[in-house]
Structure formats: C-alpha cells, structure tokens
Length: 122
Image (cartoon, rainbow, N blue to C red; front, side):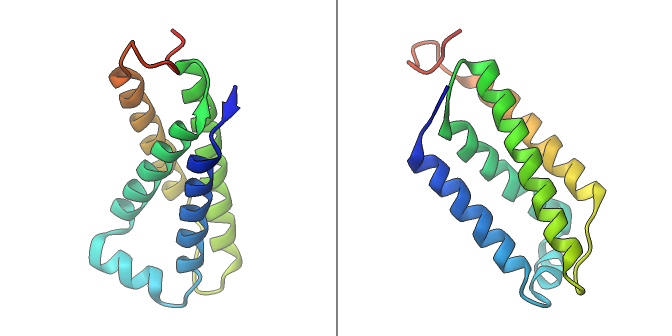
C-alpha cells in the first residue's frame, strides 16, 4: 500500500477547514439550521471518503477498508473536538452518519472502478 500525498493533503486540508469552521461560535448552528445537521455530515464525509479513497493506492478491498478506518477515526476526532467546546456537543448519531456515509461511498467506488485502472488490483 502507498499513499498519494496530493490527495492526502486535500483530505487533511478539508478536515482542518471543517473542524476550524465548527469552532467558530454560532457558525455550526447557523449552517445546521439552514441546511440540516445530517445533510452537512453526509456531504462532508462523502467528500472526505472520496479524497481518502483517492489517497490510498492498494487493492480495492484493502483501499476501501483503509478508507473506512481513516474516516471512522476522523469522525471520532471531529466529535471529540466538539465535546471540548462549551457551545458544541458530541453526537454518536453524527458519528454513525459519518461511518454510514463512508461505507456507502466506498461501496459505490468499489462498484464503479474500471477494470483497466492500474490501481485496481483485483
């Protein structure tokens, strides 16, 4: 297995942007009220799953497993950070949405990978 630094840096950058945006008092509540908390989680973690899947170069199932593990840890870190902020709260439901989104996106990526892809080591 190897890692593609470009995609990994995009993943890290987006995660840091998302987490730092969530530390601004009132910002997360404003976005949640406008778009819905669960929709925001699905969109953010779908994008992070795509970026992580692109960052990992490995056989397809290994790639998906690594992606799910990384996304689960990022979701856990996100919720842990929220639990430290007095104006935010951690949510097991949010973490479950994050993992469910990553699972669905990973399955879709596994099904849509062309067999001619050099990274598809099936």
